[in-house]
Image 1 (tube, one colour):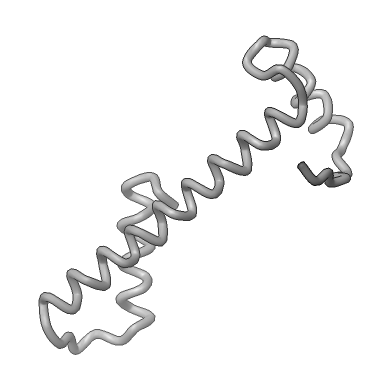
Image 2: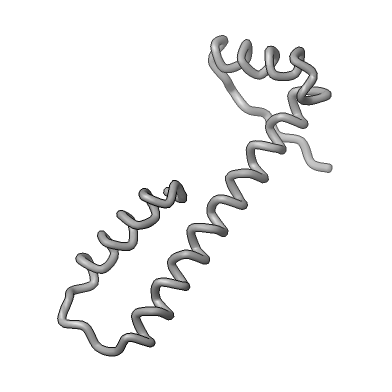
Length: 84
């Protein structure tokens, strides 16, 4: 497994150490890997929601709305669903 060096503020470092000391994680690396996995999953969910919205739009036919307006609505829906 490759390693990576990351600079953190003392506040962030203390937070991570507290999470490990709580017993939820074995070490700092495990906690960081969990954060990255969760971010990746969240991003995939956002992409899936966008694809679903695009498929629904295609199925509904031609719209007189402009792309920025449609994207704004998609973002609004994602925020309401807690996915953005």
